[in-house]
Each structure stands twice: as structure tokens, then as C-alpha cells.
Length: 326
Image (cartoon, rainbow, N blue to C red; front, side):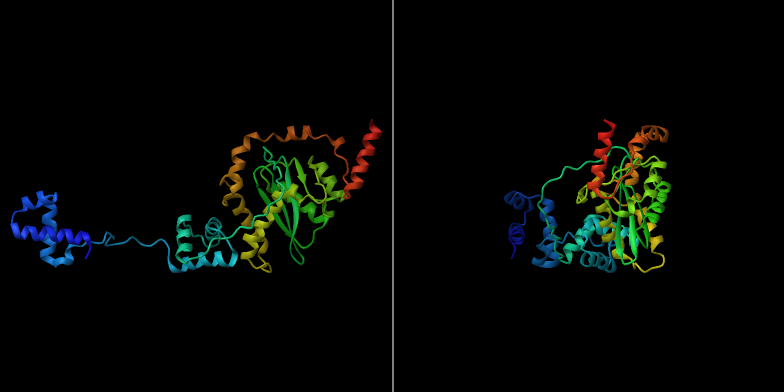
């Protein structure tokens, strides 16, 4: 028998013996109300009535999550190895379902799903830089999705605003077409385009168009992918979150990609932006963007020479040009 039940039974027995509630209350230092409450329960249920009643509410509110939703959460975790925050974003994007992070954590804990193990690669720390003005530097790259399917990606260094498109090949013609799309779809004027040294970016017509639009061309050094880290990371996000959830042979893939781009820019929170979306970051800094005439004024055509794909030859040519002008 529970100690509390034994104590309450002692109150009842002493009350029965003395027949005086005041003396019982004084002896055990309890109120008359307490003695009366437990005596009534004893009369009605016997010794069993002296146990504490359950504090669980008689009626429960409707559960926020059902079995099918739980299965969706478990599927996203097991099939795609997503954490709670990414599961939350994918449920909203794919199924238009909104759950708090705490709810998702509860489901994972309920089903005893283990925590994701993060592989930590210890390497030399690289100092990272962020541009302070939207459009100041736009990183651009091409990612092979499958045979005959290439994604062109451009991402703003400052706001992470992204423009993407699919092509069957990576050629200078497609590069020009993508650059035109970038100018139309980006909410800011691009001042610099930064790429790797892929041959699709170095064609004469591509560089001539950039000159015409007064956009500086800044290819990175060979074997320095970290300098284009933002676009590399954005492409990995596309592979993990978009292409893992669609059929790449779908004839509406281009349309779905545009929907994903819209979601990425205006709805998906970014940890690098302290939970803001690229669009929110852009609106926050919109007033810092210089006007087009000022950008074009700062563009000096004579300094923007043709860039060679071979880095060594390009550096030799620049050294020769400096020697001639000096």
C-alpha cells in the first residue's frame, strides 16, 4: 500500500475512533476540508478511494498529426536522410503540410529513429567572404544531372538569390541564352560574373556580350572550387532536395524546376542568412544597390580584356601587356 494511502487511512481510523474532526485535524495538521474530502471517498470506494486520481484530462484535443503524416516524416528521414528542419521544409513544399519542429522531433523520437551522424572533415580553415551589395558578384556554374541533361546555375554572392535552367548540352550558345535569362529574371543588375574555367564560358561571343552589357568577367583559378563555393553548395541542395523528389524524364521537368527556383528564393529559409529567404535578404538591402548608370560608369572597357581559358597562358599574356604599357 502506498504511504500516502496509509496516512489517509490513519486519518479515517482516528476519526472513527474519536468521532471528533477537530482533534484529528489538529493531530495530523490538516484542514477539515481535506479530512472531509478523503472520508467521503473512503465511504464511497473504500481504501481504493484514498489513492490519487489521474490528472489526465477527460477529453483530449484533436491530435495534430495522424498515422499517414507520421509515415511521410519517417519516409523523408529514412529515404533521403533529412534532418527535422529539412523535413519540415519538404512537407510544406511537396505536400503543403505545416508542422512545428517540435512535432517532427516527437514523431522521430516516438519511432526511435536515431540521430543523423554528421561526418566532419577536418581541413584547413578557409576565410569566407560575402559581398555586401546584391548583384556585386554572381557565381555561375554548370552541373551534369544525367546524360544529355545539364543545369546552369547562377547565385548571388550576397543574397543567395538563384536562377537555374536546364539544357541538353553545355555550350557557348546555351551559356549566352542562360545569361540572357539571368538578366531578365534576376531582380538586380549583375556587376560581375564569376565562373570556373569551363570552356563554355570562354567563347569570344560570350565575353563580347558581357562587355556589351558592362558585366565584368572573373573566372577563378584552376583547382579552386572553394572560390565558387556558394554555387557548388546550391547545386548540391538542388540534387538533394529537388532532383531526389522528381522524375528527370518528366516532360514538365523544366516547369517544376522553375517552381523549385521560386520556392528556393521566396519560401525556403537559409541558415547562412539567419533563417531569411534570399528574397527577404534582397528586399532588406535593395536600397544599397547602385543605379544602373552608376554601375556602367564604374565599368572601364579598356581594363576588361579577353580572358583565355588556359590560366598559365592568360597570366603570361597579362604580364606581357603590363610590360608593354609600362
